[in-house]
Length: 298
Ligand code: PMP
Image (cartoon, rainbow, N blue to C red; front, side, top):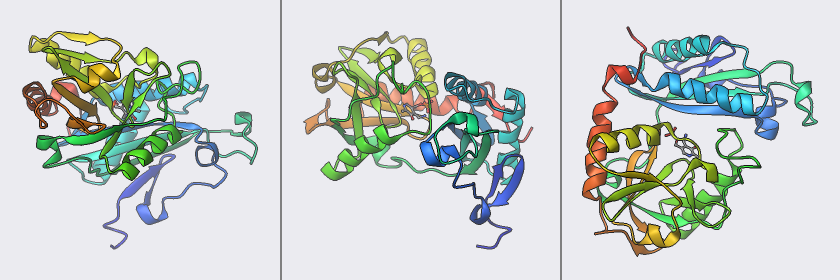
């Protein structure tokens, strides 16, 4: 690939071809996972829920006392410009803010200024058949971090908890992992929120047990309510999960993915259920609605 064809990566206000987009090995994002990030989808030039993602980025940074040297509006413009610069219509944006370059100690005071990175590329997660047949999952032994610890409400660069759970799923031959919170109820996937349909009602766990406040999950709850479904935010036990008619994940990368198996137990009829299918159709329409994001090209 020539340099002209290479993706252009934004780092601290400048663009670098992908092969030359590098940060210091003294950056605390690299040394300690000390930073925050967002994954954002672009649908036909529309940066979906961009303002919501940027707000969450700043909320996560605030929780970590990480000062971002751009206003939210400037950050929005940086994302839009990166998408345009790469001439991408359908893509996946990874926006990262690290504590910046420090010394080898972990003291954040040694990091003078945050590093800002914006990558506009593509992502592939459970496409095609998986979206119709559904995926298999494993409930991992790796509990979510507690809300009074490194809570998953903060979208930090420290994803070891998710990586450990994903490894378990990989080794056991399952497509994805489901994580429990400290009391043993369902928390979320490794990068997705969880929903069940049981007795015709939709339920999802509260984020107060340590799940990320998903932007897709919020949109899906609103869609479901509009369609007349009852949506409960409640603790979900393993029994409720196993005996659900339908189970699905939501997330920016995953969008909506049906789950057909949990720990070798078939869910419902063992393929995508009608509620999931309906919500997937409505969600796809939402991603085309100009009111749901910011158009990078207008
Ligand atoms: N939980 C975790 C741990 C995640 O990383 C993600 C992906 N950002 C989600 C849930 C889904 O959130 P969203 O719909 O905002 O992408």
